[in-house]
Amino acid sequence: RSLVLIIEIKKHKNFASIVVFVDADNKILLLKRPNVKNLTYAGKWGFVGGGSEDYETPDETAIREAAEETGLKVLPEDLIQIDKVESPDKRDVYVYACNKYEGIVRATDVKKEHDNYDWVSVDELDKFDKPDNSMMLIKKALSVL
Image (cartoon, rainbow, N blue to C red; front, side, top):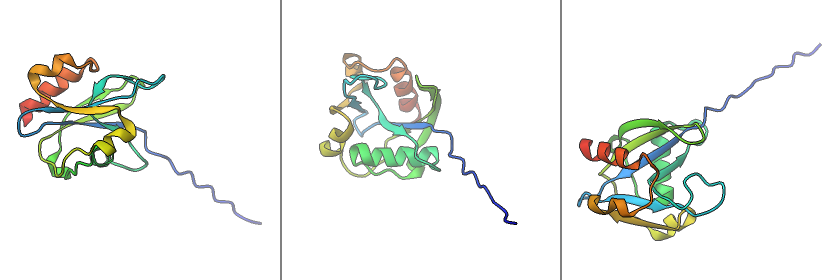
């Protein structure tokens, strides 16, 4: 007689993390999402970030996504969580503000997933087509940094 042991490994619920980067001149880093069908916020200018991988914490996701999408290196203690919102696909999105990071944005990293990027001054933000809650999140980021 044999005993069959079934172990179910549960994946953590998928979530996303985004980072509102603010530079020394109080400019906000925006990345332009490709204008492709079925992409959330296609063609809009948004923040650095993306979905979690298995067993990551929200800040680990934010740090990994920042490195992958921009080349910027961030330490956990330099992330300030400013909000948690819900994405259009009903995932939790952890929102961080950050003004301490190492490196410069590398266009080659940006171009892997986005069409373009820009550091945008607050008075120019309205010229960029952004998701609806972007200005609220930018204001929160600027208020804590």
